[in-house]
Length: 205
View 1: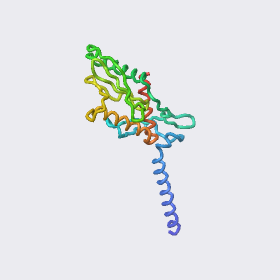
View 2: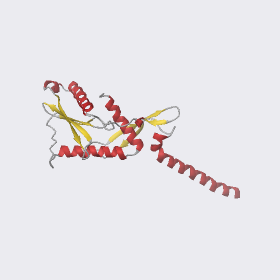
View 3: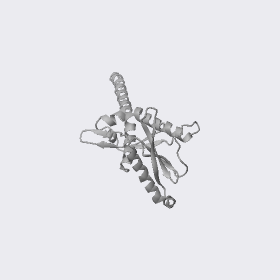
View 4: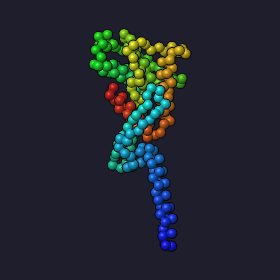
């Protein structure tokens, strides 16, 4: 009986230690997915309700396994998108929509002009592509953000900085929020999100 009394506290210490290790390991897995070998699941689903205004983002964290390490595919670096790349993405998107909607062909929809929307520091936040006879397509200015942000085949997009220009202010706020989230979010989640969107940009190159 005396021996059992000594064994039981020892088991409690061991079990407690293992549990603490497991909790700590689980908590740190997101960071270790990027930096450490052999710790990550492949295609682990991650649901992120970001500060984006339009929709919650649902992404998959895909991991590339090498001989000695596991690296996030978002070792892929975010890149700025120039106006030429943005226009091509808009034109390709419009071409796909023409195949789905005959009315767009009949009415002769095409990209009329492309303009940049900048933040207060002069950095490009998005590109607005005005269409003829009407409508617009909004594309991002960063490969870490999905290419097509918004579009409409009716109306037009105004750059007039009036208090009642809801679309302009909503888009400006949304794109700033996306940039802030990418710059300050959790490393592994941002990495997976960047890779998912970079893959979409590849389709438009």
